Image (tube, rainbow, N blue to C red):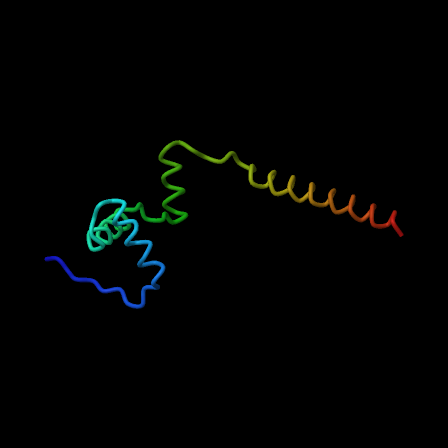
Length: 94
């Protein structure tokens, strides 16, 4: 059975944009709002990390052992080198 919904305190500028959108789509404001709600209800839900991991695993995607460790070490080393260059420049200016 259909349910009536009510949204209170909608800012005037939002209502105006919705009315403009309804007019562009040659619909009433009511029909436009129903379309917006239907589209929002059909959106793909956000995946949890576990769900994302399981989907990747099901598709045969796996991380090579130690990849994350190598990436973290490389990033840390690059940051350290950059910091050393900045410090050397700062010392040279004194």
